[in-house]
Image: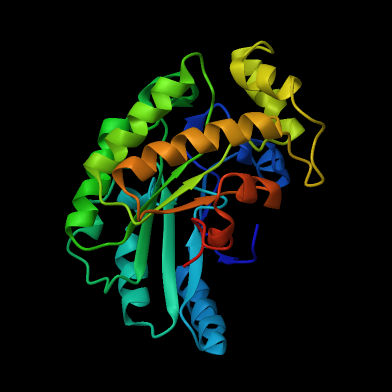
Length: 280
């Protein structure tokens, strides 16, 4: 994973995704509540200071430790952040979300300095693992609406979960996504889960769920402490989705998330290394 800047005006997330890696992080373990931080002006001042040192367009990512838009109906933070980044010569905003709350964004001046990225999965996977989350239909509609207003839109398909019949499921959904929304970049990733987050998932789904069973057949935990599917399964899944996407959008930027160099090589994406969801 390349270095990048990220910031947090929120803590944790109100959604109930059963595979959530945040649930296993120390900050959530010791303070398992959704938090709204009230020092956004100070955060933006620090972003301004850092960005002016870079002297080139630099992404600042909101979505690593929270959902970037889930609480926007309460805070209206987007109405502060998007204009700030629109006016800034170097700072660029990247938002990651599963939310459909885009109303506040539609009439803001953005100058394409705010990139909106949605976490998506086929409806079959979302129904099994994403509790209290806007539906895929709602997310695709939100993506379409902001794209019509000129925002750069991306999608990240992660964690890809190879349920029974996953080949047809993901091929069909990739086609639906690309026909519905003019995304500029697609990023793919498998499960990357800490032991503590896996324990929480198994309390909800039992130990014989499809994620745990796939991990159990896989290689040992990687050096970053996360469990993943086997390299061969990841290669198979990525290759199918990439081929499905290329049939519709040969020019589409495609990247991988939290993956080793061998997978970038085997999927033909080596030239895209470093141009993934969180970066420009």
